[in-house]
Structure formats: C-alpha cells, structure tokens
Length: 232
Image 1 (cartoon, rainbow, N blue to C red):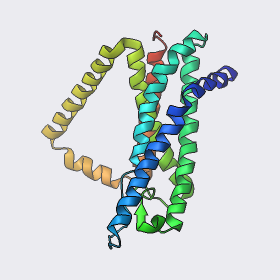
Image 2 (tube, helix red, strand yellow; image 1 turned 90 degrees about the horizontal axis):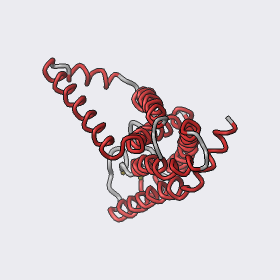
Image 3 (tube, helix red, strand yellow; image 1 turned 90 degrees about the vertical axis):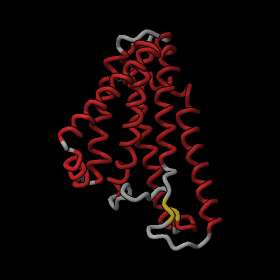
C-alpha cells in the first residue's frame, strides 16, 4: 500500500491537466452561460434557465484520464514502478479526485440555489434529473459519472500503450460491431419499448450511480488486465 501511495505522487507531474483544465473549461462554460442568460433578461421559463454546461468538466476529465496513462506510464516504468502499482495508484488518484470534485460541485449547487441561480435563475449545477435532495446521494450522483468517464478513458488508453493505435481502433471497431449487432437483435425482436419502460422505471440513483459504477468497475478491471502486459 505504501508503494501505491508513493506512486500517486507521480501524478503531480500532470497536475495542470488533472486540476487546472477541467475547472478552467467548466468555468468558461459557466461564465458564458451567465452572460447569455443575463443578456436575455427576464423570461419566465418553466424550470429556470437550464443548461448542459456541467458536462464540460466531465468531458475534460475523460480526456485527462487518457492523457495521464500515456504521459506518466513510461516515466513510471523508468522509475522502477511496476505496472500494477502504477495502475492502482492512478485508480486511487481518480477515485479521490472524483469525490473531491463532487464535493466542490455540491457546494456550488448550494450556492446556486441560495442565490436564485446566480441572479439569473440559472440551473448550471442543479440540472433536472441529476438534482436530488439528499446531500450524500447528490455527491454520489456527481462523483460516480467522474469515475465512469475516467475509467473508460483509462481503459481506452491502456489499449494504446498495450497494442498501439491499431489496437485502439480495433477495439473500437469491435465494440461498434457488437453494439450494432445488439441493436439489430433488439429491433428484430421488438424489444425497444420494453427497454424504454425498464429505463423509465429506474431511479435516478440507479441510472446515475448504480449502473455507471458497475461499468466503471468493469472498465477498471479491464484496464488493469491490459496494462499488466503493456510496454512503455
């Protein structure tokens, strides 16, 4: 465990990517939304001025997750750190980062609610469907999607360090083929309506926490299996 904790320090090399850019991009998105809705003026919209700008931070975190593997992994091997230790250290950083970011988003949500949407009835952090009343659940709703995008991106990056770009595109093509065949099967059997009913019966906690956490866990284990045979 101590070795894993020591290896997490490697990620200070890329702190600008992991900490600065996600918040900078989301901050710009937030500022633009404030300016747009302030310029529109008083317009009575049902549910407030809702925007999807919050997704920007998740998009950047996903990109960062892939960059971290490609940039830091060769350096870690050069430092004598094993592939397993590096990957577990990276996963630990991603988990801590996800919950730290989620807590910050939660407090920003409280501020948004207390200030009537920053004075322009903005719903940037209180996006409908992801806005829940339980504080602990709200933090999970913010945190688990971070884990979802981070571990999927890490898995994609491990395919590159293991098999190169051709391996990455081959994996993408295989995934596209499987999903396409699955869609064709569902259409052939007429299962779309049943699937829609199943999805609408799910709670927000299941769709935003339970299922993403399961997929993130599978991607994390897959990434560990792939990177253990990767070359620098």
